[in-house]
Amino acid sequence: MSFYMRRLPTMMVLDLEDHKFLMKVLITGATGLLGSHLIKELQQRGEDIRALVLPVENADKLLEQGVEVVRGDITDASTLKPTVQDVEIIFHLAGMMGVWRPLSDYRLVNVKGSENLYKAAQVVGVRRFVHTSSHTVYGLGHGRFLTEKDPLRPDPDPYSITKAEGDRLIRRLMLNSSVETVILRPGTFFGPYDRLHFGRMAQKVKDGKGVIIGRGDNALPFCYVTDVVQGFMLAGYHNNAPGNVYNITNDRPLTQQEMFDAIADAVDGKRPTLHLPYLPIYYGSIVAEKVVAHVTRTKPIVTQLGAMMFGSDNRHSVEKARRELGYEPKVDLREGIKLAAEWFNAGGVDQPAVTQASQYASLAGAMSDRKGSAT
Image (cartoon, rainbow, N blue to C red):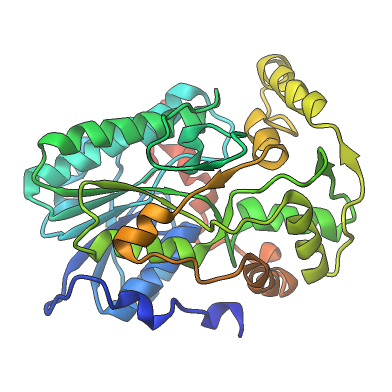
């Protein structure tokens, strides 16, 4: 089955709350990987979709899909009231990640932006708010299955720190809120159109430049994008979801070696055989971030987050979501790799991005001249 025909199994909607009227649904981050897949599922459900899009972003594809586009900025609270007006459910996917920016910029988008949107939702009486956190809020390298009861101990990088701060903030705000609130902590998702993770990994092994950090027997926290979409649909519509936090990922992870070997096979690349010791890479990434990057003002080749993501053992339990929501990962990771590889092999990374500005949007919210910001 081709990657663009793959849909969530219809059985997943059986436990969702029944509704007999069209609902207005707002998505932030609609031009991203997760947003584009979530829109497809919401349209299959027949919802009326509104997307909050930055003034600098090209929203042509969204308009072609029949999505209502509203220009605005989560870091500017004054733009949000008309955005959330008449909305029943908000899926807040937008955030800053994968860009080399200071902590203050990440905090502006991932914490203050989330607060602005949630408070706007409270004012107009939005029924449900689904907030996107991250598995990185627990910290990396624990080497066991982490549950929602584990404390938030993010590693010292801007993305993890601010995702944990945003997570704590929403949990605090929901205590005295009439808005049904759900927080999801997804794994690192991949799929077709994924340039950030799959595209880079596939290109490395395609070029014969793949390397393994450490022995390679460590679990990687990856999951296929439609399994994350399943989690968001359940969070948005299931009666058991409000007031809860859920890990959403694949609890049958591949090891680092298995993941890279499978990608290499799928893209006709070379399986990596070069192993680099983990600790020198890890400590070298710290030096690169604290010293070299400040001198060169460029992102290091290997970041601390990247070293830990690929070089340490990361597993997350989905038993709570399975028990309370009926969540179940549907796409085997090897099958997901094959689906993403179809996109890559068709020249996906060489094609224009979904929107012209999508890869830069996460920078805009932190610009001092305030010409734009991250949705």
